[in-house]
Length: 178
Ligand SMILES: Cc1cc2nc3c(=O)[nH]c(=O)nc-3n(C[C@H](O)[C@H](O)[C@H](O)COP(=O)(O)O)c2cc1C
Image (cartoon, protein in one colour):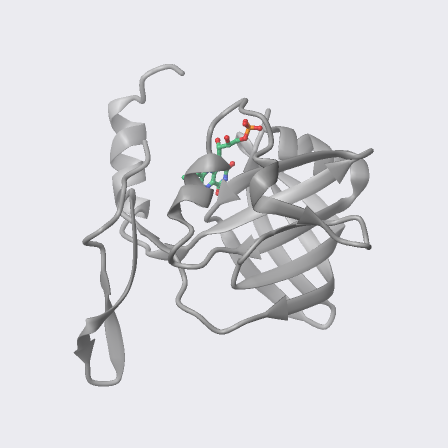
């Protein structure tokens, strides 16, 4: 990959101030699973139930979502940093050991905190990414702490740093990315 320009690096550092959870988006194209780590996730609408993800052009998951019109968004648990890195290797084989095919034809990531199974509602091109709106057709979640991504590092909610009316984020044990 070409080195990042100074402006791109500075922009990444700036948007990296915004802490997010971490998801893996999967899509099943004719029996071939694809998946990628993604933090550009947001919920959009309650009626209908819509979520949004931003996928870079050229990623296999975007191609699969465009063709199959289906995708699943898996929210990772704090202990799934290895899963986040496994799904972030460009061009790597689908890490099948972390996923399971459900009876509806969606790939869910084992031990994830939540899964939203979606039909593609709309796709909007935005620069070098496509914004994929998914209509959630089924969803489930389980208790547990989320994996957090902040300033290029993984971490979690730090229970030792409780402050009134909220919690600060501990990024002490994280491995960076990019
Ligand atoms: C924490 C994290 C967040 C990421 N978020 C996004 C994202 O929002 N959109 C995106 O296109 N790629 C994102 N990536 C990069 C993709 O996971 C990575 O480029 C992936 O390998 C692309 O799939 P490909 O192998 O089909 O190209 C992220 C990576 C990490 C580690």
